[in-house]
Length: 212
Image (cartoon, rainbow, N blue to C red; front, side, top):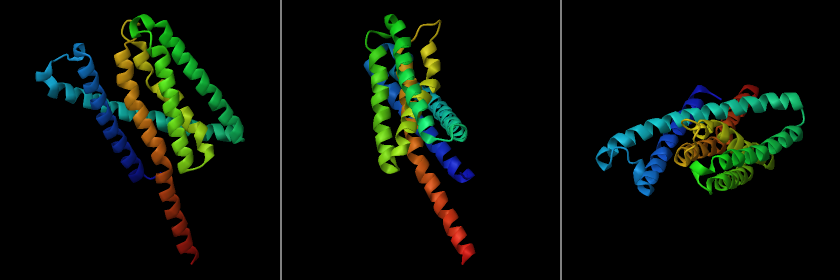
């Protein structure tokens, strides 16, 4: 990947993170008036803070994305067989969903009686949908890695929101962080093959020109 392509992916991911965080934050404020820390008169200040957080979330998402690409490269060289690495990713994904539900179930007094099963189901369905789209755009081998990224990597990136302040988890904090991460990770995985495909075409045309 060239610096130009990486920079494009970097700033677009940050912009998406800022936009989704703004929409999520204002949606949460509209549904829960207790979240309006500065009232409607401070809407501009709230928007600035949420956009800043969204930029950080986008950058954090890209760090996790490239960390997974590095892990995937190392794992493929270790396992040698793609199906072994895919099997491990599938098992880890199922375990992560169960562990996520277990953590939220233990904090259901703070988060409510819905989040501990709603969030894992929502994450699993979203991951399946993105994996299906990715496999249709590329090939079936991309299905499990995409689901792994959308579930496991997103959960790791959103882990600070599951810690809470004083050990108490806030459902608002969880949704506020995990929704932008889902969108950012989905954008990056769906854009990856387009970026690498354009680079492959340029390499092929350059090699053909040298041969001629």
